[in-house]
Length: 346
Image 1: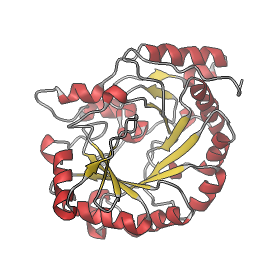
Image 2: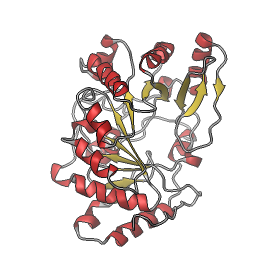
Image 3: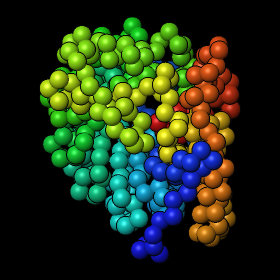
Image 4: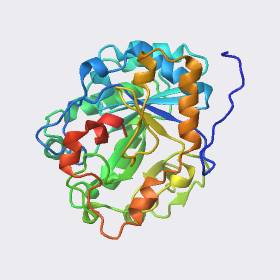
């Protein structure tokens, strides 16, 4: 089975089943204003969370269908106890070619080396400001120094292509764009600037808060001079650019320049709900069939049937909305925690 050639599965728009985002927990130790701005949240039931064995089993089926690159997300994935063991399990599966992690970095310092030795391929750390007081205002936690220590630990552990993700918000941190580039240089990380998106729990989102790609590039050009697009043709969400000295950076412009036509990503929540689009309001239950004893072939057929019927282009459709506010009303989020960004992973 492991040596069999993978038969790529394509959706109705010709997009392959590609990268799989595995959310291992819906819990987080920060309360970022663009993701978790409310005071109270409804959490997934602990008995519903997939075990590591179940996650690895499903990931193997996805890999057989072409999704051989996985990214561990949350919430904050390092809050899940012994997540290093899951990394080792995934790394032992020859069908899975790459294992990445997105983290807020708070707990990264103590386990970066262990994760690298277990087989983790790449790390992306979310960091929206270099100012401790601004970090506290954004996250409601005084943990800025621990995030910086986590980034430095990841760099010391030798992770290739270390990345820093920065959500840019007008009037909040858009004055730090060049500073983030300079910090990235000091730790050998590529910075990716992300437009503030109206997904999941972004209940306070407004189009006025978005700093579009064009503005981000203009601010970089004012500091560094001519910036050249690298012109890469792949399914990565970030469009990459190079500064005059060759420093690379990325911009994820999901709001103003959606990349739905090449999006090959899907998301599996910690309790086994599979979402084909970040903007999707409904997912597919994989935990139920798995725990009822469905065969590997039956689950593979469920995945293939859902993907081949996929026509999602959520970001493009949102861009076409004439009056645009938050994607999901607060009362709906409270009824269904799967609609939260911290549940399905970014």
